[in-house]
Image (cartoon, rainbow, N blue to C red; front, side):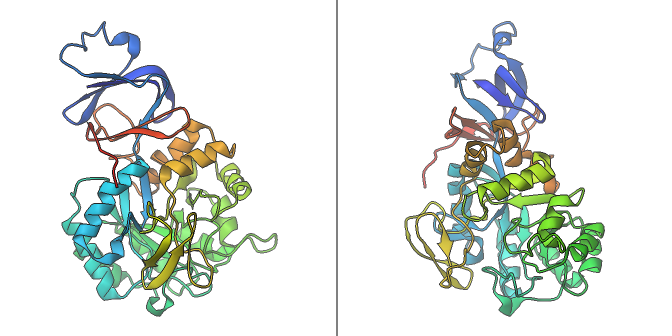
Length: 386
């Protein structure tokens, strides 16, 4: 088929009045609309003209716990399959299945289930993000401190072996004893190290970044703040080179002005939009679970009994739209922050997050308001039902 649109978002530019030729699940050719007839490409092909819309890569969510009533920590094959299928509604075509701090037995069971169901239909599981258990108490958020551990590389090796090499990213608090050596060894294994749920000083964070860490987990949330005499984790996330800063843009986790500060400090090329969505995403107001904790969805936020935020119900498409609506980023920049940037942060930009000839046709069509018109997975339009 041939898809035409006003704009096509590429790796470093937006093409105007262009089209994508899809054959055998892949993007065969990107061309201007006026080249279609001259290249004799019309015969036998469906042509869909999206007129004033935008074609872009499918969103890449590298920090997502669940959606539509299911969570990866449920340890359910059916739940995993539902998450992957239903999250297409948010425009997400690639994910890192994200865990919570839990017992070693639970972690082992979850990564084994993910490995066995990696190729299920829906958003493609490009790896696993272990958000915990190597965190500290003060900024624990919705992580259960009962299971906090000091980082041990042998545990990670064991989990990675059970996961069949799918673990792409591991969370770590820099102030924990042994964090520098752990980061060095994790990176040597090809696993990206993400810093968060931490009261670390700027210097402690920098030491672990120098050892190989390259991501800050949901920047501002669950970390020591910025002070002019103690820049803390937030200061490190804003200023250290060669790192990526995750950002939750739902307007609740981070004030729009604070989001603007981070994007100005780092530049859009190193700020990765994430959802941090949990099972209440796409669901009605009510009571849900996040790991071992009871939480309540009030319609816009999910909170623990003490009132603290517990994950989100954010859809990636809304994060993109919010950044543009708040005047922080252009549509091109916001889309890159939801596609290429998160993919680069964990080294999967070779398989997702970019529209390029020869790649799988995992793409979105957005209208002028950045709402989703259609989602294509391997070149096939999908039904967007929960």
